[in-house]
Length: 183
Image (tube, rainbow, N blue to C red; front, top):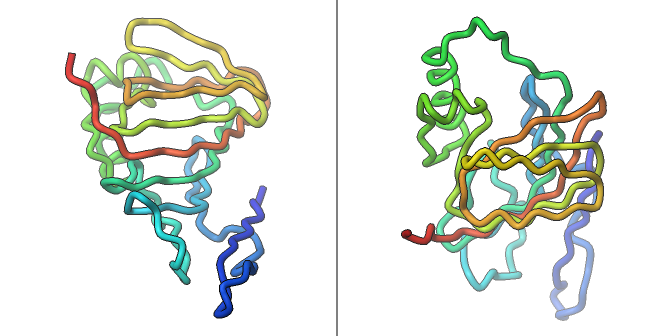
């Protein structure tokens, strides 16, 4: 479903105005769902005088240094990988997908055996469940099922997703560049 994006800014007199209002054109579609890139920044503090479109497109998995990404994800139900697909094949597919998304994450045999969506970003992510049911998988084998209205604060950790039921999952996400704590 197209997402209406309203972007505001200042006019020449310094008064608030609408810069653009319409369906966001930056949508990446895959067999697992779609990602709508709404906006991004590449500096902190963010500047407000940008006149163009700041969405990163094609999609970039991780924020730029000192930057943010704002997106909506819609994940399809029923994406199942047959049991007879070798882990080595899944690894090559996952490596290609993350490379195409300009990600620094390097999938491993261990990560794809857990689930091919298993990954990590060096970012602080705020995720708001809008609809559907989604299970968040952690690398210590914890699983948390999320529903509409739930919020996840993801602090640069390994995680994966599994859509539950027959309804697509829609979630709103803001990713803020971060630095992984060394333990």
